[in-house]
Length: 342
Image (cartoon, rainbow, N blue to C red):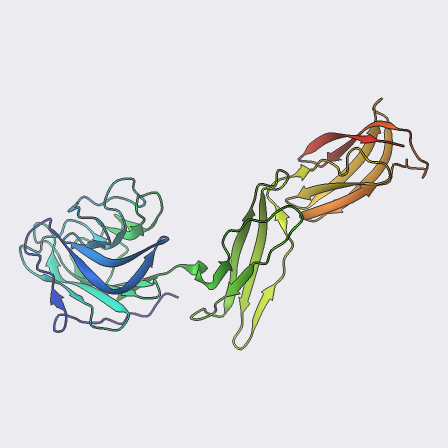
């Protein structure tokens, strides 16, 4: 189910990178466009003789590691990171003449000791996608790293590490699956009681017919629900697009302080359920006696409000004083105090 193998030979059209030594790193060279990578953008790249390129790293490391790795090389694109030796034979080319596409080809480069010869390439596109293609891979194939990692080695994608994964005619395509969703603005400031608009955009270009999922986090200084989770599902059909509206979901259980407090007539209590649960909210007097039940039912995940009018379960008004309200589920219990004034 992966991408189709479609080898592009650039030995006759590309530029020789000029790598003639073992463990050599050359560059920077112009990409020809702005390439997005792990939240940053780059316009130049470097080539290491040991089967990888980077947007920033001048390392010459031949000892491959699993990814992500906290050490160099950073901003790494590694189709076949191992101890290669182009000083013996072979060559490395790059081609920036194709519109919005960069190609780097390792052509018939041997490993250290000459036990194998390897021809493979990296294809980068302006859309932030890249493809590894393997044309002729003879020799040791289970001592190399295939993957990527970010600018400090904290995030990466380890496709293969010291395992026989690579073979002739293989294509590997890597791209950011979240590019179909955009949010504008990404941050804003509003005063109490006001509201603002947020535009969520969906881009289905180059998406296959399938369901796509994302999680939108609304973070704020709201002390009761500082991180509101908004799940999103995009269903791409052959001729139509469906966007499913899904309820807001709190990150954790909570019950907020009632408002107004103190109150005379009616007060409002807000609470949140991060997953489906049996929920009860009871009112108790200062002696611990149950006065009223506000909620006693199964609830789906979401934000809720309930009101109390200062009456007991028989519909009679209760006296001025201090009361407690308690949220109970099988996972969470919380109690808060409120003041009723007659």
